[in-house]
Length: 194
Image (cartoon, rainbow, N blue to C red; front, side, top):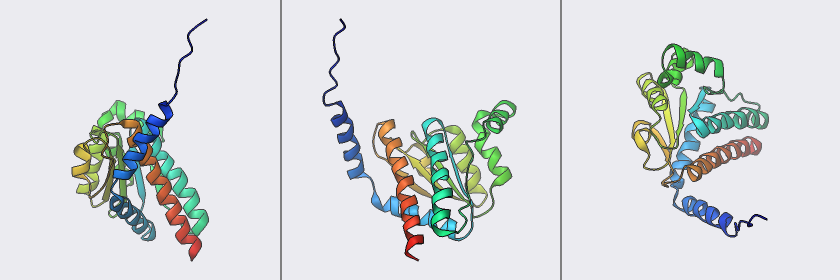
């Protein structure tokens, strides 16, 4: 018979790390980001999300929640799109040009001046995210970056930032996801109050 593993206290350790990160997050950054997304929505601008790995799923999750729930609560179109969900298009750009350009090349086709580009990178150093933000900044978009660790290049490059000051990718990703839910509930509640 194999020895039974004892996982006693492991969930508490993780939840304590998460709580500590929540306590230290800059709430003004969160509120500012909500305002940035709200203004883009009210001005009928596109809200475009990008990210790699787990952050690509966060980028997609944002748009799934925001497009459906904000529209249903307000009846005002929410023009959200994610550049991560067309695998064929991403692979075509990756193969024919470069994986580092999969997002910047798509932005050339869909982004308009004044649109909001939300870039998510746990490390803040994903090259394809950095190139896309450079393109967005140079072509009149508003940029919002979500990062962790030391913020990487992304934190310094974007117009607005949510920085999770923690050396843990999973805690960083948890808090990025929480921002998406905070924003959705906030904008939905504004619509209900009208």
